[in-house]
Image (cartoon, rainbow, N blue to C red; front, side):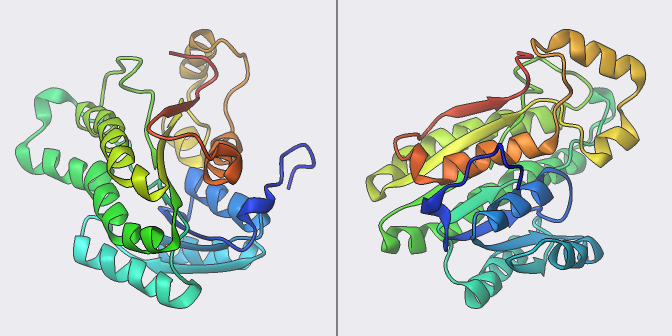
Length: 252
């Protein structure tokens, strides 16, 4: 762990479930919790990348390959993680894909698939883990949003719509689960420089425009999103719920 980053004693020994944990922001989140001494279980479609994460990150890790668009598979995957490392104290709903698409080409089946990929599984993951959190007397749920719709970004209307809906999900579930001391928050990344983003869309022109949009001049590494997630899972954030926590360099 970077010696300048905080350590949270309240997280040591906690069990954390992460969706989409095999690459990008998700892999950074898995690593950040492992460093805190957590038991970390993650779901991902990519078996090879999942195995690599377990081999390269030190700590108590478990993974289950799963297509989160299949809710029965999601429930089974979370159940398998629970049997291996225990019930979740923390859930991070991270999995998503920001594939570009032209509004004029979108058909109903594609729209539904985008909702299933970027939104639906979040609710059903919450539904699956919340009973254990209620029994434990509390927990933390962090949903991954996006500043794409805040910025009125174009080129992916189904993705932006799904990510806007994440904020509604966070707010309503924070209200329903709050009496059980379960906190629900949204982390809002800006344009984060994952390997996927660099390979597909990070042209010199696009990066220069991004720097102009941000208040801060530096491009955003995934580690900083992970640091916000770890904070919100810790007892330091005990009175934080139903809110948005931006990691976007001041670009809204």
